[in-house]
Image (tube, rainbow, N blue to C red):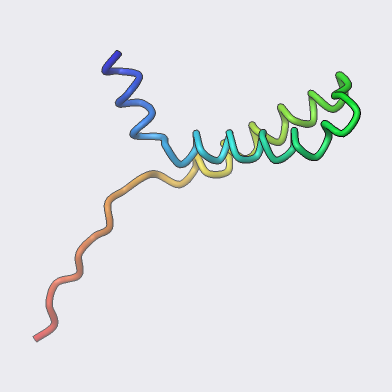
Length: 68
């Protein structure tokens, strides 16, 4: 269980990007039911949304040294 939680913490931006893109695409195509082609569009949008954010690592902000 801890390994799953640690993985999500390390990749939270990609998980949120995946879910946001997938849900947004699903909401766009769900007006009269979702066809198989539209499911593929939802999947591709979710993977693209997660993949784009996955590239940027989650790093803590570096503090700048004080200027004297």
